[in-house]
Every structure is written in C-alpha cells, then in structure tokens.
Length: 158
Image 1 (tube, helix red, strand yellow):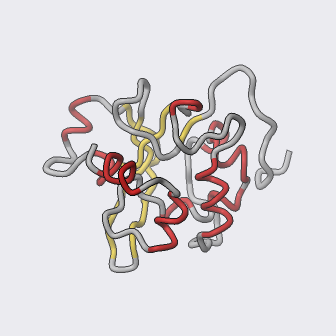
Image 2 (tube, rainbow, N blue to C red; image 1 turned 90 degrees about the horizontal axis):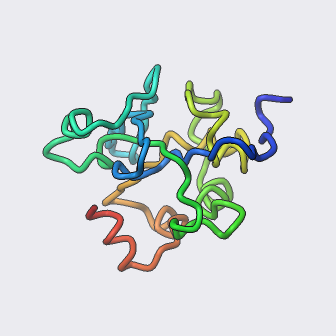
C-alpha cells in the first residue's frame, strides 16, 4: 500500500483522533504547539508520551491543549465532528486549509490516525498548523471548526 494513500478502516483497533482532549482515556502527547505570528505550529515528538497528570501539569499555567497536541481513541458519536462514518473536521481541514509542509511530518501515529486513514497525506500536510485550542483562530479556521460559538467557547475553556 502506498504510504500517501489512506488505508482501509481497521476493524480491530479504534482509530486515534490527533486533536484529542487530555481527559480522554489513553491520551498521549504527540506534539508541542508553538504560537507564532502566523499561527500555531506543531512540533511532533519522536515518541508519544502518555498524558499523565504530571506530564499535563508541565503545561501550567496554560491548559494542556494550549501547549500540547494530544491523540487518543476517536470518540466517534461523542464528538461533534463525527458524522457516523467520518470526521467532518478532517474533511474541512483538507478542503479549506492550505498545506503548510511539503514533506509529511514525522508523526508517530499516522497508521492509527483517523485523519490520515480518511484523508491521506493531504491531512498530514495541514496537520502542523492545527491547535486543539486556538484563541486567535482565523475566520477560515473558525469555519473549519464549524461549531456553534457556544461550543467553541466550551471547547476553548476546558
């Protein structure tokens, strides 16, 4: 199978959401978010780190999702982006956001990643600009997130 093409869904293991919340069971840190003048930039870790209380506390005084990109099992029907089969967020990221890298990032969850499984390398080329919490999101990013303003506030203030 070509590494740039989405793989068929796995029936054995749940796919991972690459933009998860720290309270999701099994969450692990996959990257560190840097806020730059042009927006968030994720630097991926060489190896994911279990999101223990001690690790998450390293983000203080900020919320962990302001500092870390976390991956955990996709929450499917519990997530407002999931339509019953696919992640609408991944679709909108690929359709509406520009690619920010030519080479695929050194991501350690790619084979388990819902975004990659669904959208292929196009998702990976956009992934480094995605921050789970983004207080200065552009209008495009707000459209990509596609949540009602009340939900955006809830997600941003967790």
